[in-house]
Amino acid sequence: RVHFLVSTYLKKFQLHPELSADEIEHWMLPRKDVVYCYVRENEKGEINDVCSFYNLPSTVLGHEKHNQLRAAYSYWNVANTVPLQDLMYDALILAKQRDFDVFNALDVMENESFLKELKFGIGDGFLQYYLYNWKCPKIDPHGIGLVLL
Image 1 (tube, rainbow, N blue to C red):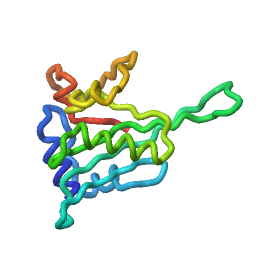
Image 2 (cartoon, helix red, strand yellow):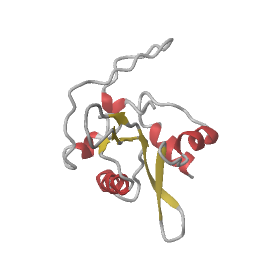
Image 3 (cartoon, helix red, strand yellow):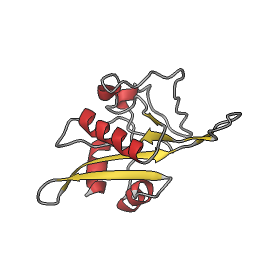
Image 4 (cartoon, rainbow, N blue to C red):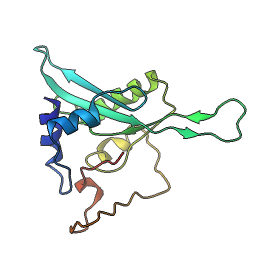
């Protein structure tokens, strides 16, 4: 069901991967300290929503107490029965419960809809994709359904 939800969601965007069920399993099946994926079920046990994030830690240099910054990065999130903002609020709580220090999200897909309200700070850089052997027009961030690990 997660494959169906994610695949259907990604088709909304001009630039998106087409993933098999095995690929979705590989990229999203929870693995401690790698990727975290959570689903919301209805009363019948059917999966209707999914949120995910991955771990990309950084080394802290020259600090006597801390040597690592645990950063969670928003991955693929599909909100069908709740607003995306509510689903992402839950993701923030789940990341905090797993001892992450920061939660990052790109302004791709529909992420713009929750970034300001959930008080994400605007970064100081821009993510640029260079796709070898692909010909495609310029695409605004909200038209991109691709998050690279």
